[in-house]
Length: 192
Image 1: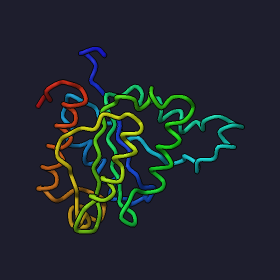
Image 2: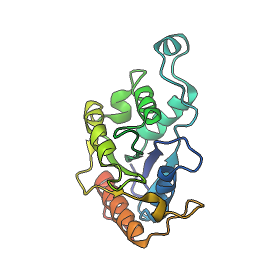
Image 3: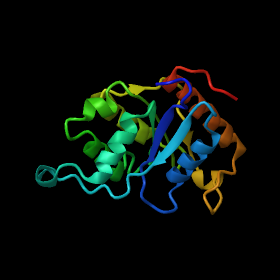
């Protein structure tokens, strides 16, 4: 990677809902990211339910191949996860399962820095979802950022009706989180 090129972090939100708080959190993360990195907001929309017969007949869907390439060419992966029924969201787990297929799991995930955050209307944020992701991330060989967790609780108070982050405390925590992860993923101190 050339030092004249700004490294890219790929962020994915684990919800398909148009007004998703986790997608809003990912947008806010891109806004507060240090100038030393570009945080690309990728999507899991359009990834079908995993079906081994579909994979055998047609190979990987184009949406999966495109996201594999983005992640494989990135300095790190930021996962922004909701919490559904005290665990991980099925659509995001499905996307990760597809992304690990085609013999590319090591190229896409192996050793890649990863950070996980999330937002929930509950008081505990996404602590259970983030914890449930740990065995999956380890199985894929991702390099989990050891920094502090960011658990955005009562998210409906942190964002306005149009999905703009209005809570300055959360904005400050998010800036510290993204800056710390960017430094971990790139090995570079952030530029202000």
